[in-house]
Length: 424
Image (cartoon, rainbow, N blue to C red):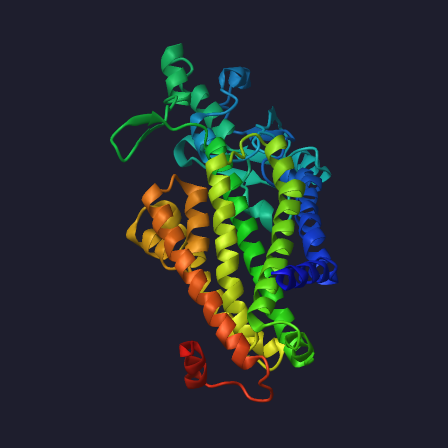
């Protein structure tokens, strides 16, 4: 046991002092921080492209509009609220309207950036409904955001009916309804729909933990594969195996690299997750989900560590071992390709089936835990099958490790690998 801990300590120290490990641990927070910073710095540009706050010029050649009625128009109609539910309030800011007489003067103001757009209501508007909109050229995204015409249309409506209906009817024409959204659960209970932004926060908090743990699983097991392949290629493994048994070496590497991966998770939680929870109270992760996520992180790492160790010893170079390990990586990522159906129906037979299969169980269960409450029976079955898979993967890896660690220049065939696995 002492030799296992010595190997684990060495692997841990060698891994955490690698440039690649340090760059990964520190580089990802810097990368995501840079993306958020860039988004914040370019916020002004986005506001100008999507709903600028500069006034709108209106040239009424038909003589229909009564601009004194602007104060009667709500700042934002229910239709606009529904359409722009997830946009920031600053981006949805309504523009004021100013009457203009001279089109050329208005266009000069648009060119100078003092007007966001110009609407020209033609003299034959009542017969044709024709309105010409002039807006500045600001690039591709400006074409996706048409000029703010909602308040203009409301002003046209209220001007046309101002002497024909009472004030309550006029208000209902401008704002047909104040919609109250309700949801019907699968049990038939009627509940309030809640704040969509809050719901998004409750999803993205656990989902960010899912991505964090999933990335760490494959990074840690990838370090194990790379280290074993390099030691075999450099024949360092011959010297090591003269002092320890293959099983001791394998367990020591798994424990050492697992500790390095766990350290990476702790650092990410400290650098990213805790500030996010502090700043964005909407990012809620229950303690139960967090504990189960850590359990699946450990089980997932042990499973793929065993598979990666057995695969790493088969190749004659790190590149060849990496190509062989692609089978495990691609299989384990099947739940990511099924992200939509699993998120929509986390208790479906597809989600449950992937939760029971050891190779897809860690990723699937982390995903299900981030989207809903998982039945206890599913968790127990998944954990039991994962433990069984870990036992066979590490046991098989130890047999392959013992037989293949001293084989050079020739990749073992499938019958040879099968013979090694059947040996006691």
